[in-house]
Length: 170
Image 1 (cartoon, one colour):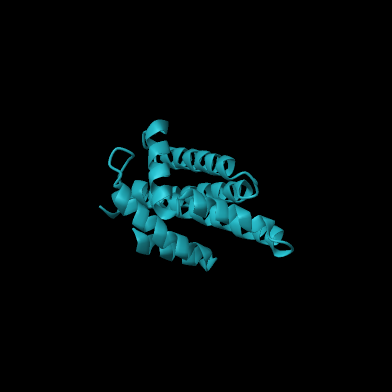
Image 2 (tube, rainbow, N blue to C red):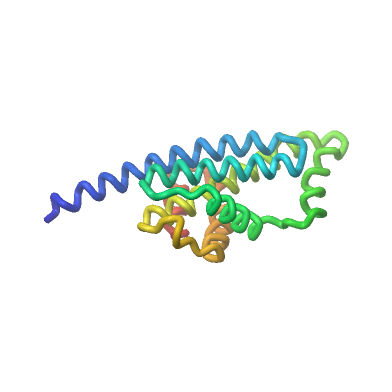
C-alpha cells in the first residue's frame, strides 16, 4: 500500500518543482514588461505573459487548456487586484516623469510589481491544479483573494518562504 502512494508523492513533488520553475521564468518575463513605457501596451503584454504561464502550468499538471477562458480569468483576477481606473494607471506611469527619482522608480517599482503579480497568479493557479482542479472549475472571487494574499508574500524572498506562502494560501 505504501509503494502505491510513493509514485503519487514523487509525481506531486516533480510537478511542484516544474511549476516553481515555470512561475519563476514567467515572473522574470513580467518584470521586463514593466519596463515598457506605454501603459496600455505593457498591460496587454503582461496579460499575454500570464496566459502563457498558465498554459505552461496546465501542461505541467496535464490539464486541458483554453486560451479564451484563461484570458478572461487573467483579466478578471488582475482587474480585481489592481486599481483599474484610468487615473490610477496614468498615475503609476506618470511617476516615471518625476525629475531625478521618476526614472529610477519607473525602472524598479513597476517591473517589481509586474513580477510579483505574475508570481502570485502563478502560485494560485499551480495550487489550483495541484489540488486536482482544472480550468473548468475556477472560482474567480476566491482566486482574487488568494492573489492578493500572495502578492504580499511574494517579496519574502527565499524558496522556503515561497513554499510556505503557497501552502498557506491554498
